[in-house]
Length: 247
Image (cartoon, rainbow, N blue to C red; front, side, top):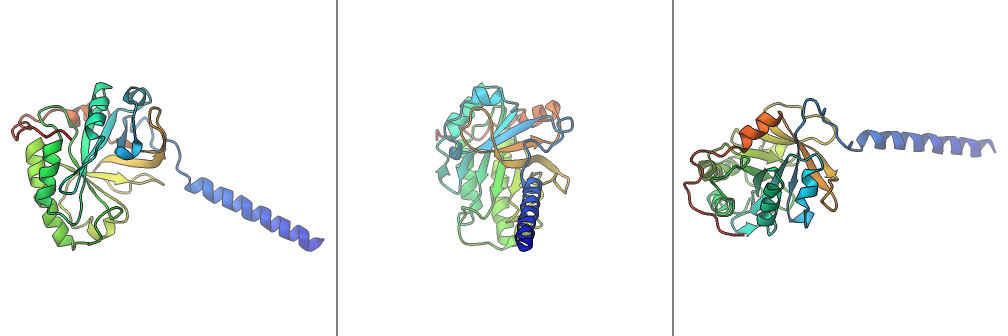
């Protein structure tokens, strides 16, 4: 009987420790301090499916960064619809490009520029660097740096703004110290970012927002409404490179 009580006590202790540890690791609904970071945003792609942008805008969302392109020729098939819907709902909108390791940076820049409109308010272009879903080849830091520069040069000239770099935790140790210096979009799920110089902080990748079925990434901007307006403003010469094709 004594052994049975010991086993039950140990099981109870184990369960209590497991619940405590899970509560520490579980992402909270809104870790950032709302007074310090009042501007919340989302990033989306075709994975989110059909989005009701009016409901999204009414659910404490101020900006949306939408996947536009990937590699040298892929266009996200929901980009044009998402861009129109988010803009019509009054959100500050921007576009991101998934950078692949198996296409020249110049080709990827042409793809992005041909799809993302210019000459109208738009958040700075974003380049997404990650291993998941990428080509199996892993370029050296010097190779990636060269191809990123070949991408960034035409893109920044077309949109008149410095690009923002998003790099995942997995890819950062190999490349973060070697890529061109640009403002960062940091992913930090368990705690606030440990470094400065960031523009966006992705604090949750399993967020829920009214108007979207399923999980969505949640972000905050460093700054308030004035900073968002500054980032969103049209660049004076961003419309000089032609008209993008329709996705």
